[in-house]
Amino acid sequence: MALFSKILNRFRGGSLTSADWDEFESNLIEADLGGRLTQEIISLAKSARPDDIEAELTQLLSAKLSTADRRISLTPGRTTSILVVGVNGTGKTTSVAKMMKYFKDQKLAVVVAAADTFRAAAIDQIQTWGERIGVPVVVGKSEGDPAAVAFDGIKRALAEQADIFIVDTAGRLHTKSGLMDELAKIRRVVEKASPIDEVLLVVDATTGQNGIAQAKLFTESVQVTGLILTKMDGSAKGGIALAIEDETGIPVKFIGLGESAADLRLFDAQSYIQGLLL
Ligand SMILES: Nc1nc2c(ncn2[C@@H]2O[C@H](COP(=O)(O)OP(=O)(O)O)[C@@H](O)[C@H]2O)c(=O)[nH]1
Ligand SMILES: [Mg+2]
Image (tube, rainbow, N blue to C red; front, side, top):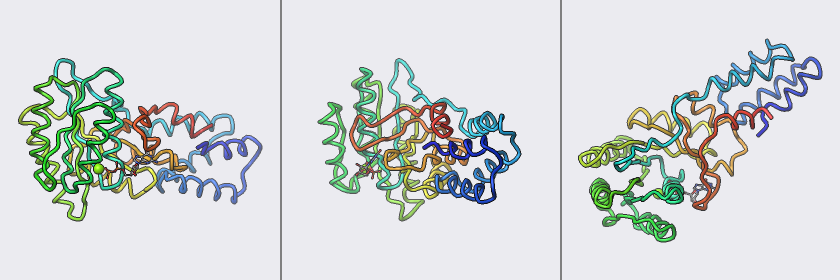
């Protein structure tokens, strides 16, 4: 990433030309920081003294990140339920598979519900992951009621005293209210049995500002508690995490770094900022 290293080096070497400033500005835009944040950074950099610029930038960027807890809130003694939402193709099902492994590696018992019943292939995909990782996946009929599958899932999770229950959902957005109503129904039905602790919104980092628009859309309709930013391996545009937290106030909890189950990391805000400034 090292978004700021060039400008910081030039800055230390003397005054910047207007061409330098233009280049810096387009670098920030290309890195998906968004127009507002880019302007803030530019005006801070223009007014800072060379000795202070790095510290001031660090402070500004850090202040843009969410201060909310990034850990998944586990409640000892009862099943923690996680609803995974987001538009098609962002990486929901893959992220559910990654979380199966992540929690199983911590010796936690996991149950998953395949509440994307829209395509038979989607049910196969999550079932295959479950078999590979060794986590039970509750499925229903293709084109059946997603909320009914989620309800069967939570019943099984409670019966088995699972530590973690994860619901994979569909993401067809052709009618916004249709999808949001479906997600609300899933939540209601699961919560008849046990509280939903986390609603994780999956956003594809390579979709840039469009990802931010998706985040705003979902956060208006469902109570999103955290973000999973996927395809960070395919994105040289490291600014998206900062922009999305600045715009929505919702913390990035996990990042996805590839297509395999092991490619999930907790988001570490401090090393992220350091990576931008290196
Ligand atoms: N490179 C990369 N590909 C990913 C990542 N997460 C998911 N994918 C791929 O993105 C595509 C869509 O993923 P899927 O989980 O089916 O998306 P869904 O429609 O939201 O459930 C698949 O080809 C995944 O392998 C990631 O972190 N990095
Ligand atoms: Mg899916």
